[in-house]
Length: 155
Image (cartoon, rainbow, N blue to C red; front, side):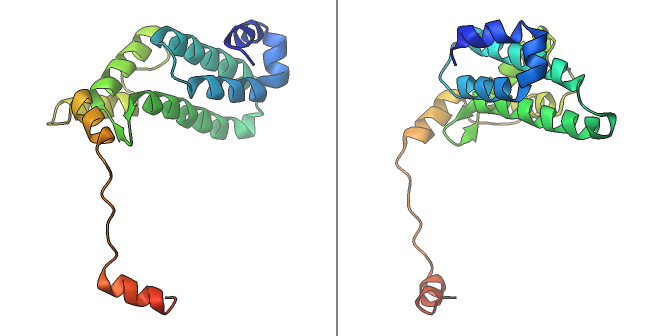
């Protein structure tokens, strides 16, 4: 599904109520791509709008579970944007969370925001250093002597 089609669908509350799970899957696919900041913002807004509508359809006894899953899902998108290789860039996380607060999708007391603020307050690798680290060849660890012996006996 194209980005443009997603935008059309998320503007129709009736469609969102009917197929919100499919819309979220497509938003996930789009967010996994290397997008511009503007496109990411639009996709995150679509995610919020879709989940706001879907939340209204959730049974009361399942609402807290839904809200927790929604929170974790949203956080995964924010963390994904701050990844450099396998590491989270706290400077990028700080910037992304500031953007999300300004857009009204995140609050100042959000745990991911707190992590970003705390991470920037201590010594950390810059984005450039993390990029350099991610380009460096990985050093393969050799198994210990004990590990090799155990491997011989299937333990």
